[in-house]
Length: 175
Image (cartoon, rainbow, N blue to C red; front, side, top):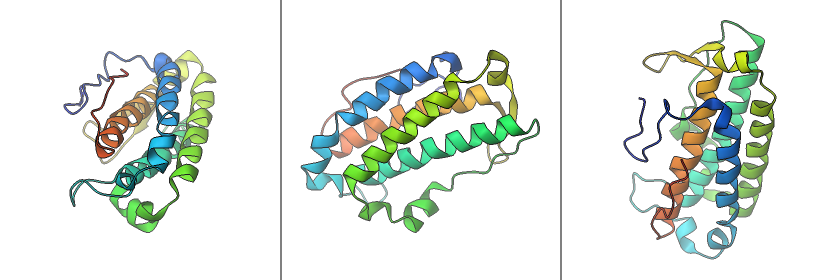
């Protein structure tokens, strides 16, 4: 997938070297949700049985940021890194996403995002092109730079999901 049909993010147009600036902007947008998340029952309610609540999406983004950080670290240690899938639905159940505290999750999300930004900023240009294998994706051969772009996509895409779950339109397209 080069362009996300849901949000319009282009993996091709977005350089991985711009990921940290985009992630910084997105983290500010998440921080702005703090009051809204704390003040509404919509935070906990699924819009449909098959659609996560804003809180569940918040947990997913936090864990996605942690996972992308770990994936980059693994890829930096091995020239033949094979990365495992997130198994997001299983993780949501195991970690009881729907029952976590939104303030704590948001704080952890912001912290995890800043850790990932620091790691991406520390990469040398050639490290962005280091290959990794994703056995569950087609094509499965990606790069560390793709992981950085994927983090931006996930954080931005799910910001829109959270905004809609809180009862408002996804008011801005970050990317």
